[in-house]
Amino acid sequence: MNPVFSTRALENEHIVITGATGGIGYETAKAAVQCGAKVTITGRREGKLEELKDDCRQTNAQAEVWACVADINKPEDRNRLIIEANQRMGDITGLVNSAGIMGGGPLESLKEEDVRKVMELNYFSTVLLTQEVYHLMKQKQRGSIVNLSSLSGLRGTHSNSAYSSSKFAITGFTQAIALEAIEHNIRVNAVCPGYVDTEMGREAIKSKGEREGRPYEEQLKLAKQGIPSGRLSTAEEVARSIIYLLSAASENTVGESLKISGGAVMR
Image (cartoon, rainbow, N blue to C red; front, side):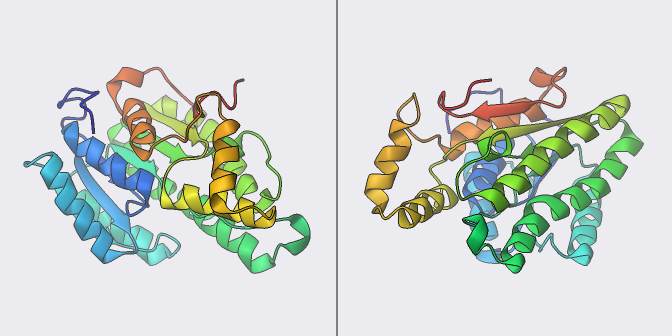
């Protein structure tokens, strides 16, 4: 990762990153330690967390990283994660809600369990985990929270109602709690990427192609043609946007939904 920020930009900060085994969460953890933060990384794949811990220490030999295997859909795991992170790594000053899944399809073929699964992780678990972290931040009267929304949380897209609804919910949650949190010197914002060159992003393109009878390469070409910049965003680019929102560089940025779209969505 290119050193866009100072290596002290997040000095004395402790950032909790959910979904750290996914592309955006993974790169955000590496960017955070490069900027001097202590990080707690969490996800359900222990091997991937250990790999990320090693990568963080290659990025910054002095990196302080705690990896916690947890399923944030489970109340006991959320509670354990936050209590232990606070005890092991010090006061939590930043939270990146990066955990999320794709899911759904055309309305007529949606299954109740699929809708509930998407909403449970993308929205409900994010809200409930944030609630626990917010309580601790409020005691210290400082902090920054960044939620991972999507361009699909700003405008609807065809055959994407379950996922889009979950991300609209995150965008609304971000704006609503931002008004509460800023009263306690806690900033809440969201990032809204479009297609990102990650496993999840590629799977989304593949699924769209399958629905429309196109092979992956053809659908990828069409996706790029629909982006003025002509390419997908990278996980590193999204991570740098998240670091900006965590840092003092954005100290009067409140309740915003930062688009990373290559020009695909402007408003």
